[in-house]
Length: 61
Image (cartoon, rainbow, N blue to C red):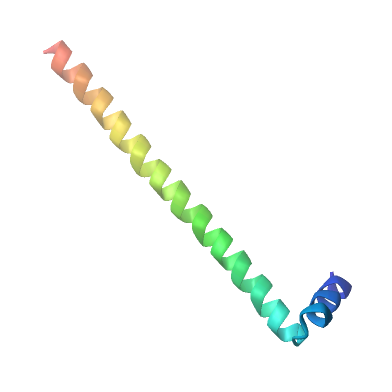
């Protein structure tokens, strides 16, 4: 992995620290996006479950 980072840094003519920073930022952004997507799916599923329960309550009574 370190060799690959060295090759990328040499190809882009930047310091390896910048490549490590870029990889760290991309990893952080990916994790954050995963959390946001899971949160949105939770909200959508909660709204769906709530509306189904509401429909059942209306038909029962």
